[in-house]
Length: 121
Image (cartoon, rainbow, N blue to C red; front, side, top):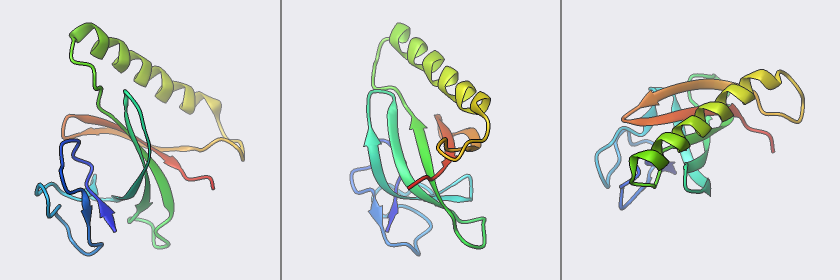
């Protein structure tokens, strides 16, 4: 099952073989590489997904963190964006450790910011 990352999608679950969401028409491969499978967390900053890195031959599992603030006023959105950026920088600074997921990618797409991390079961 592929999960649509568009925050407003009403029918986000799609068959694996589809390239576009059957509910809203959005592309299902993020950055032409990452396929979200299911939501594993949600909060006021955004959502976290279990995903697959389709670029790797083994299609390694990974985690996609999607930042899209729920707050509507500019002051709160700006503060949440600063906290998001601080989190991403801190993950980069932590370095390699078996108990800390590595940051694999960081980018913006479709007006949302994303952080992709190694999946640790």
